[in-house]
Every structure is written in C-alpha cells, then in structure tokens.
Amino acid sequence: MGATETQRPREGGLRAYLDASPEHGSTTDVVTDALREAILDGALPPSRWLREDELARELSVSRTPVREALRRLSDERLIVRAAHRGSLVAPMTFDDVLAVYLVRESLEGLAAQIAARRRPAGLIDSLSRVHRAMTERAEEGGTGELVRLNLEFHRLLREASGNPYLERFLTQVEHAVRRFGRSTYELPGRVTEMLAEHRAILDAIAAGDADAAQQKAAEHMRRARDARVQGLLDA
Image (tube, rainbow, N blue to C red; front, side):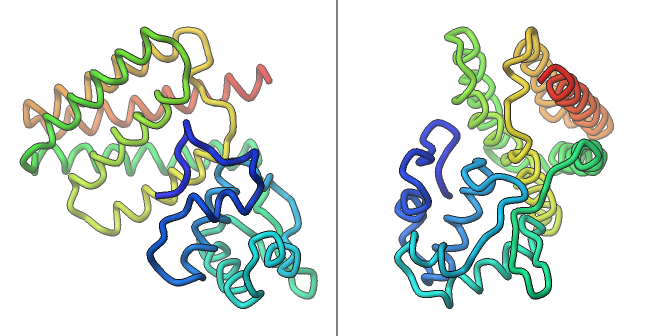
C-alpha cells in the first residue's frame, strides 16, 4: 500500500511518494505505485501534463520504468495519453462524479450482498472493530483517520465477496473517489449519518440478510453521492 490518508508525503514531492512505496517489486512497480498515489492524493492534479524526462529526473530513475508506469496508469484511466503530445492526468468533471457513484452503488451493494451470504470467518469481528474505531475517531474530531478507516471498512466488504473481479473493479472505483478531493466528512452531520449507515450494513451482514445488506449498502452510496454533490456545489 502507498501513503495513507494520514501520512501523505505531499510536502516531499514525487520522490517522497517513491520512498513511501513498498520496497518489493520491480522499479516499474514502485514507480507506478508512487505516481498512482501522487495522482490520488492530488499532488499531481487533474489535467497536469506529465513529461517522461521530468518525472524520471525527479524520481531519480531512467525513463523506461516511467514510460511503462504511464502506460499502466493509462490502462487504469488515471491518465490520458495524447498522440504526439504526451500524457496528462485525467481531468475530473461533475459528470464523472455522478458516473462513478452510479457504478459504485451497484458494486458496493453486490459486495455487501455476497459478504452476507458468505460471512467468512472473522468478517463480523473485523467490521465491528473498524466501526468502533471510527466511532471513537468521530468523537475526537478530525477527518483524516476516519477516511482511512472508511477505506478499510469497504476493503473488508469487497474482500469478503471472494470475487477477484469485483475486488478489482471496486478498487478502481475507490481510486476515482479518492480523486474527488475534500472529504464529505467535513460536511455538518455527515459523519453521524455515515456511522449509522455502516452500522446498518454491518447488522444486515451479521444477520445473514443478503437482500438487506445489498439495500443498505446501495442506500449508503446514494447518500455518499448526495453529500459529494453538496460539497462540490458549496465549494
């Protein structure tokens, strides 16, 4: 995993993202992870042009792993490659927000539904642990750790599905959501609503009620979408 929500290396430039990446894997893997995190973090903002030579120099690597990393990130739709012009960070529009949440509503609902049917060992305990931690952080204030814990809650759900394709698609959707910027938890009342929504999903899964789990997860995504739209309109 790259930099977390509470430990972002933005101040250190791209090299800090490289240093924060896992040490295993090829140079291309590490460069790809570093550039991905920089994009998701906003250190490389939407519509910024990415020059291979500049990136290689800042990361202190050759152009070859940078070129391959950009190709991979293009496949992930995080960057756009323009013929004879290079690559740029994919822009984000209001329509993108609506499109992402439309897909996320269906996929998160499906993940919760399958999780309720399978209920692998330890799932309920893990979800409960994360929910308790989120409740404690909410009482303390601040959003950074809440964002990280929220990602963990949803990661547990998609992993519980046991479906690698669903996991991959939801990971890509999660990457898109991370690019939206300001957390919706900064909106008045949203944290309280989110905790109640997570509790409803958790209770449905614990009861083995797959239909209710799907419904509660889908409702959670619709409310998250509405909060996101409100935040964008208020910005």
